[in-house]
Image (cartoon, rainbow over all chains, first blue to last red; front, side, top):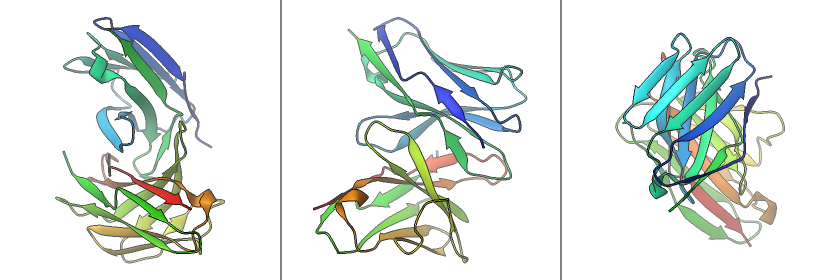
Length: 111
Length: 116
């Protein structure tokens, strides 16, 4: 079945860039997503990228997709303490609708 | 973006009772909603796909009689945890698809269930 993997923890200093990496196995994945979860809350969609794109930029967020290697990354520029959260990578195919999630990367931003 | 709301946000109940959690799409119609369970510091585990007007599709290992799902309208799906036990304590999250073409999902705020 589908599998999505992420590193579990990342710690950066405020003002630095953060890069969170994700790999997936399903070559038919159509959409790849990044979600943010703050403590005790649901998931907030940050951004998503269609599989025929290589890059998508949205303000401080840059998503890079290497479809050949099935590798997805999320770069957060000028990381702030408010960015501290768990970040989930997810994939879905249009027809299935349901998504497969990675285990989440806990980002800690130190002042 | 689209808004999905869950109610209640948290609930504490006694063992043996049943608890109902609601998931509403506030500004769009959702023919499909998804229910997840999340344990502390773990990822989301898909429990079932809720389909408006038809039976839910449960993932392997999820007890249908334990977790009753009803999707009676295009804006409301409910999850009822029947005869709850302490091991059912968890964070339950729902999501809904805004657009069947994009697969984009919007999530509720989650409902934390504690069974004493």
